[in-house]
Length: 189
Image 1 (tube, rainbow, N blue to C red):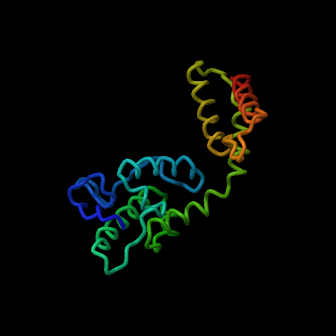
Image 2: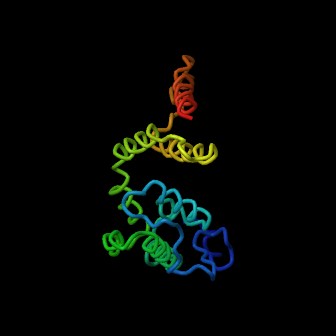
Image 3: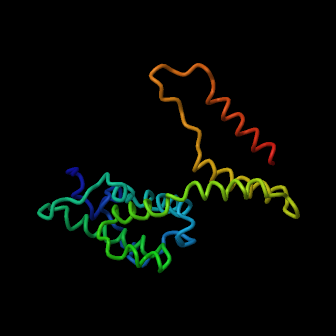
């Protein structure tokens, strides 16, 4: 543990700091997680937890200190607060399945393992929505916004990576794939 964690009462950049306005009943994101919207919900939750400097607790970068550690009480307080925030940000049927998990990181991992697995089904739904969408009575701005929402979610699932070869890639295949994807978006628009 970092020795600088002992200023948790006064330093907002300390991951164990909790502002007096933060309370266990806060609903941090909407809509609530319903079992089908994991990716958008988890993205929203991560942004909120990052803004509160608590993301390191759910992603295992800050682990539970030993019970004998002076930081244990502060970790427990933060962990319990995050657990409550997560529980208040999911529908009741899901809360029942995570209620007895004592670690915010383990709760996050449990939700990820159970609900992130449907990627292929979600990608299929998104692609179908993408190809079915037409402007109809929508303004050009509204139509583009609907397309952009679908594009970004598809990109979240199927982003085009970067070459990690020891020798820099010189064939240009990644740029070509990106160009084809961008052309698909333009054609659809």
